[in-house]
Image 1 (cartoon, one colour):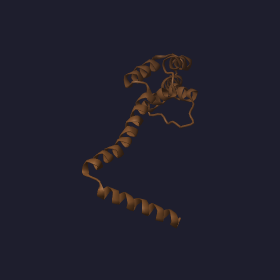
Image 2 (cartoon, one colour):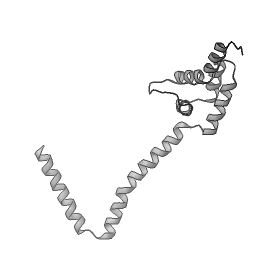
Image 3 (cartoon, helix red, strand yellow):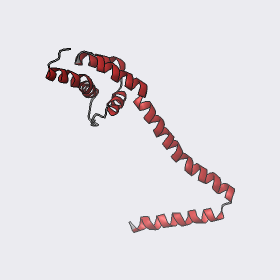
Image 4 (cartoon, helix red, strand yellow):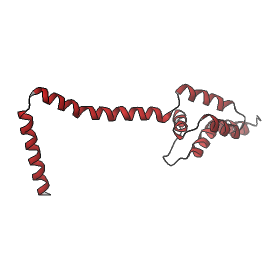
Length: 133
């Protein structure tokens, strides 16, 4: 371990000597190159996040409204299978409904959670109150 520290110290001293000998214009280009990879990584992460959800907030709202009007859980599952094709989109809907999620949740489990939160809750409430759909 001591040898590694000595080698690292030597490398840093050589780097400091190089920086002292460089002209300002050379240092500017080095600094710009050092900053740009971090910016590229940040931009890549942001674009990945946007493409990952692949569903617009207005679409989430329209799907929610449509789910609220369906008469059965089965119809809700069919709707979600037809309109929401990815796990990321289902996660976006579940997040907007403030549903608890786990990383291990499958696509089917997310569909079930969404349907139970929207249609199932209404059907249970109707059954308790003695109303039939």
